[in-house]
Image (cartoon, helix red, strand yellow):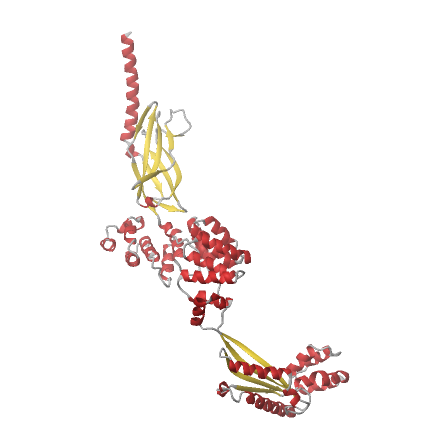
Amino acid sequence: MKRFKSLLILVVAAVFLAGCSGLSKMKKNSSLVKYDVTPKVLETHAGQVDVSIKGTFPQKYFDKKTVLEITPVLVYEGGETAYKPVKVQGESVQANNEVISYNGDSFTYTDKVAYKKEMKKSELVVRIKATRGKTVLDFDPVKIADGVIATSTLVDVHGSPVLMPDNYQRIIPDAMMADIHYLINQYDLRSSELKAEDITLLKEYIKKVNEDPRKQFKGTEISSYASPDGKLDLNEKLSVNRGGTADKFIRSEFAKIEAAKAANFFNAKTTAEDWDGFRAEVEKSNIQDKDLILRVLSMYSDPEVREKEIRNMAAAFEVLKTDILPRLRRSKMTVNVDLIGRSDEEIIAQYKSDPKVLTLEEILHAGALVTDMNEKLAVYQAAAQQFPTCIRAHNNIGYCYIALGKADEALAALDKAKAINNNDVVKNNIGAAYLLKGDIAKAEEVFNSMSAATAESKHALGAIAITKGQYDAAVNYLTGESCFNLALAQVLKGDAARAKITLDGIKELCKCGKPSYLKAVVGARLDDRNYAMNGLREAIGFKADWKAYAKTDLELAKYWNDDTFKSAVQ
């Protein structure tokens, strides 16, 4: 009996040692397993770090009774993130894992994990747990790739809010017009005409303008006419003489006004035969032969032929003599004036004193004049309080809150603007507020609801496309004006040469240093060391934080031992 127990122990031990021997041999030779990783250096796109792995086992490596659980893990300072594990098994294992032949075989694997900024300086390792029966053995971790290139995270994700402008005009043209009518073949001023209502109103207008410092005379225009009946030479003299009497009258009204002494203040022109006036009067009349008269005017351009044809319409001509032609024997006098509003300084002073005195356009203009964003916000809030149905006031409050980084307050103000008119400007600003809030999906929905694409909406949608890894779409949105996001999208889609052209076309580099730093990345991708180093130095000149960033950026790994690089980032 004792002999039997001893034999049993020896058998179990032999089996155990055989198992350990198989696993130990696999562990010892684990360096013979080849891992091809795509991409060679991991990258983040659309907030994910994707990886594809092909593992190849040599002949006579994989123990037939063993299961390997392989787990890729991103290891970085302060933590690690594991991809999903994959199991492969030897030919004699009764399980549902992928079988690896003893004669050599391979497996493929893909997975992704959410990106964390700590992953920018990391390593991808595989951890292997081998199981043979009840025996378990952990292999030493094997580094298979570096990671993570985080260039896609440089995207500028923000909207471009739009202010609705004021319509304030400090100088507004104004005018007053009056007519002097004459009897047929005469040009003298009749007292009845000088007592007409329009002449009286013109005199009062001149007096009031002269007394108002907010109004300024610009000049007068006198247009004198003769009706298109009768001889041309007589009509020419009549129009000139009528112009003379009207000019004399208007000059007398300005005799004591200083502004009238300016050169070219009084302007005059004459029309011998007023066919245009004739046509206009006929068109608005109810004359029986109206259509026939207008047809004659369109058929003949010669004045004598026109007059002859019209006179042939005897009944019609009699009506013309009494109802139409007398209105054309006239001098039209126009006094032109500029209405002078408050200056910018006066508007600001009045706003500070009592904003309720200001008109809507004046208070909106005050908002455009101030530069401090908090002050600008206060002006538009005052405008909204005074004019609650003004969409521009509410929209511009939203604009200011976005600029101040207050998304919820911006959305509250823009909801009021939306209730008045949900136009594209309001939608654009709502989208910008959602971007500020971090709700990219909602922002995209709002931008896509606009009735027409704008430069602002395309800029935002281009940025959103980059965050989603849709680089071709981003380029389509952003093409048209050189900007950082366009260059970034071109880099990310693999067109570094085009990105260089875009970067060189940016008129004013951002002080954040992003465009300059992207030049360094582009230079590295194009193997243009000078361009890369110049871009890096330029970025650091804008913002010293790029030193630390560059030291861990795998885009620039080829330059880490370069003396110029070291000098720039020290």
